[in-house]
Length: 186
Image 1 (cartoon, rainbow, N blue to C red):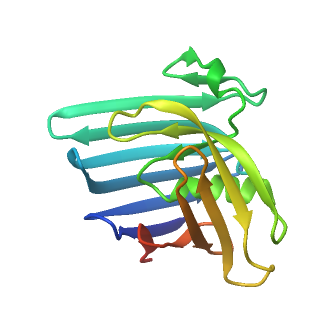
Image 2: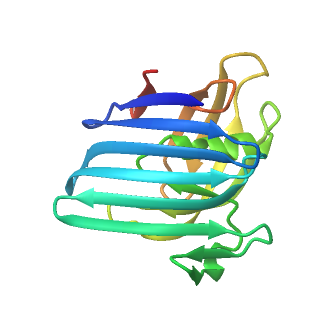
């Protein structure tokens, strides 16, 4: 079991992640408290991956003032996705999720892609947007920047938005520094 804490750098906020490796699965449970343009919020998520870090299921709950929302996502080994029990064919080419507001979900493609130094790969993810928890397919590119020696670094690029950030991660692929947005504190 590992406990990880991130501080938001771009707005008031923080995240606590508890990562548990079980014999049959990897379970990540996180709580995020922060501020968006729409106001302050609290989000709880539970992400389950298989032992190879392949995404299987997520439950996300968000509270913002009196409003409560939740979404359940699941990906079967054959690539079929369900969101709140409804099959989503538009997500079929997605391998992972990206949960807005959390650096944890960058870990999934970083671990799964197995990039060599200077290698880049475009992927599609099921992007969970805050605060409405809408789920859309998004294209992203990850590039490995390090030469196989610490610190490990990866470039994240959101294809639709043009946003790019150079992430520093630890040996497990968990974000240590996401410049201007998150910094790990523990």
